[in-house]
Image 1 (cartoon, rainbow, N blue to C red):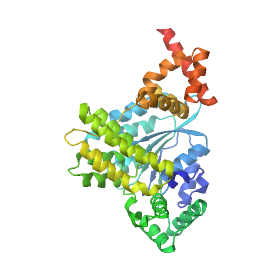
Image 2 (spheres, rainbow, N blue to C red):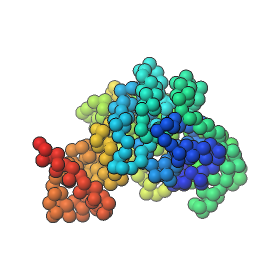
Image 3 (cartoon, rainbow, N blue to C red):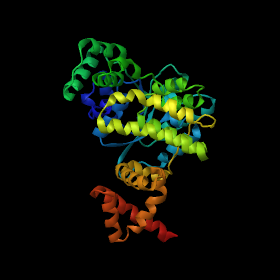
Image 4 (cartoon, rainbow, N blue to C red):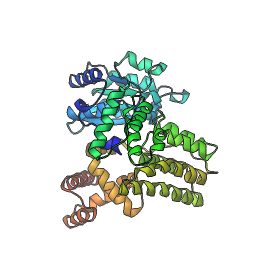
Length: 402
């Protein structure tokens, strides 16, 4: 996707909100234990999340990211963030807690969530950055009082047009001025929506430009509506209004199905239909034929939703143990590659591969001959082999203890 391919890696190459961006960079650069947490406020698609990641990377921070709408209750937040009160570094690296969509903390069931965040803010030994799309919510107002607020505005039309033309030029493509003006107008200052629309329009399906507009609905909200929908049309509208990437939607639906206890022929049927959507995403990746994206949400709605009829499924998520989270955050690329490589041939999730298969592989890899077999079988590069050896040492110590 162009929105990821051309996502700025340097905060100085971003567009719009220049003064706000500069102030945030100064805040993180000069951060100390006495600094207040940062709260970035503004409409979606203006670069808040991109700014956090780009600035952190340029200043040498490791980002520990959570979507607050996924962990809205006090217990969930405490499970994920509580241990950070005792950890100032991760293998001597600088850390930054990033909570996206904190305006997703709402409702009676979330009582205590905001209070826990405020307590974490006071006691945290590392920078805390929060992002929200709305400002008039009472809970956000409460957070704003104890934070340094950075307000973002919608990106001006001229800058949006400049970004689209730049990307089109780099792709060797063009759009007529009328289509370009429509994209800029419909985007309403949302860079992400404008770039997504330009990509679809350039693929030859300009008539669906407006269909992929970001409508500020989170993946959690979309799936709650999806599973509670009374028709496939309603399910489709929920999914198509969500900005999440196709793979994230598939993964979240799969986790929700598995955590809801669907069994037998019903499970086989549902997972069979879900695989069709997965095949479509793979086809898009192979052929770069992004016009197929227009069918993705429709497939999920018509096939998966209909296959789920009669099953009581609710949104659910999986969480890894804290010690494994730490290792994945620090060595996520290597551990993720090993886990996914183990998962595919054994037809298990990457989570199960990391928790169950990896320890056994590590123990067997104490033998140099077996390590060579693993290295060749999984096609591991040098950095990944080093991580595997760390796992061998760690697990060997645990076995020796008892």
